[in-house]
Amino acid sequence: MGGVFSGLAKLCVGHPFDTIKVSRLLAEHGRFSGPVNCFLQTIRKEGFSGLYKGASPPLLGWMAMDSLMLGSLTIYRRLLLENEWTSRAFAHQGMADINTLSSFGHGLAGMAAGSTVSLIAAPVEHVKARLQIQYAAQKSDRLYSGPIDCARKLLRHHGVPGLWHGLSATLIFRSFFFFWWGSYDLLSRSFRNHTNMSAPAINFWAGGLSAQVFWLTTYPTDVIKQRIMTDPLGGGLNDGKPRFPHWKDAAKAVYREGGYRAFWRGFVPCFLRAFPANAAALVAFEGVMRSLPE
Image (cartoon, rainbow, N blue to C red; front, side, top):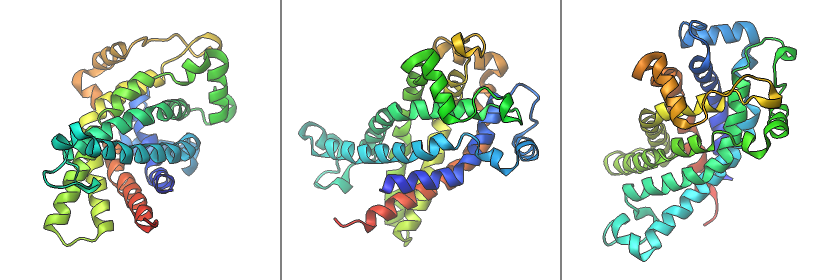
């Protein structure tokens, strides 16, 4: 239940930022002069609903993804602490409950949870990314009329591997959840020990700041993932010739476009989105969890 509310909060607050980020990241050079110009062009051509294009997959997907991620995160935390051979390394000496797992242990649990949720995240983010780069104002001019149509065409022409295209890139990207959940624990612990903030306030600030730590460490891998997920698949889709058969091919292509700066293209809307979207998500999740009977 906590994951459902977390995913819903994240979508409502964060999806417009994500649309701008993906549009800036994958549009041909010169189409948008900056994130504000991208925002204005999207509103002018497609209306406010254009900011939420591609929202249907994450609406359902993020609720499922957050439920799986946060549920598996709790399980991995407990396994790390309760397992005899890991408890000494990842728990604070003299403590024995789940709340005493070290920040490093929380990071490892986050990395494991990120790998687990990638199985759901890959097809959801794949469909979302393909919908977000359809710029034609008229739906009749678009290759995909919606998420179901997109998923159906991917399966019809490329099978299950086509729908899960980009899974390896998703696994690489989500392994950086180590930094998200490790820093979330560090920040939460610091706020509890050095401030008088309420629990929801701690969840808000720690959730928002740790999400920004995550994006600062992982953004280049997301750029590569987006390129792979929006790469033409060819075949019966007739959407062009595939360019990136491997992760390193996409990385090299990004570098050729502008050196190391190209790996940070579209970072501003992503960074701005990270705090409010994830702060709201963590407040929703922790609030629901506190309200449930023990």
